[in-house]
Image 1 (cartoon, rainbow, N blue to C red):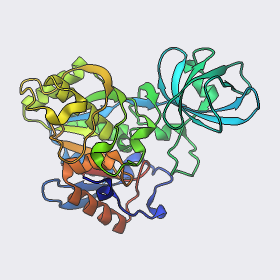
Image 2: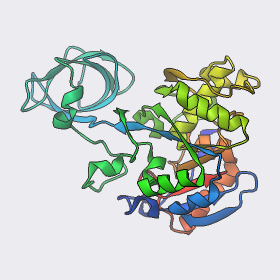
Image 3: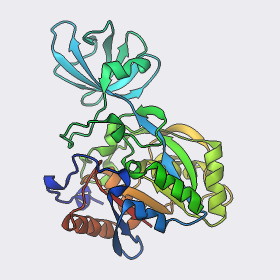
Length: 355
């Protein structure tokens, strides 16, 4: 398939610049992935579409203050650093914004004694830098929350770009499908008999980048650190065997769960299309590793039965993933309907429930 098959036009006025309050007041499109039929609701109405015995799986990663401002030690030139992944106590993989950010360059962080040395140049603007000391506990002072580039409004409360259940620091971006949940809504779902499980996938910015090759199969998918505990794997397996549905909150959760299913069957995420049936009595296993699972049309889903997601960027791997889940024609038709109906797109936008 060609990447152009996942393109669509979106007026800038459709891109949500600020989140709605309360969180669960966003609009919710219900999409039947078999028929393409749509319904239009408010997000809190999702309780009517989940059943006792279903399992709602949430990504509990937390966005770090990943955008840092530095200056070159030799010239004073400004450099913007975006932390992508921690490699050890002091080394990080980053995006470096600025000219001539080359190995050997020292970066100073104003009003602190901390500096960092650029030790390796990777693809495009990615670099490996080594801080003079561990900075994990200092990021609140050093950095700021990175919002996606299509959001131009300032955020008054950084917590509004975190899910209410975020726990483990490590993401450069929020798992935005989860931004719609409130404590009251989660409590109501529990009282209805919906079970809760969690996973972790630390999100890198590559998740939101357009694919720049012509054919999908030529795209080199990014890898992200993911984790599913034995306790949560047990909840999912028990529900699956009892006939309950596994509801993934967001594409990052879906990627984690499908990785767990592929590993359970003895396969590799990078060669998912070569794998046969999953293990019927153990659909997923606990794991902690990087995953490079690339889901696009033709992928055979193994554990996810329904998906809560936002509206995604044209030509993105996320749009390809939900097209693999609901069918490209159904998804693109739903997107055109969403534009006509005034839905809000992207990170602070409205949601879809695909089942």
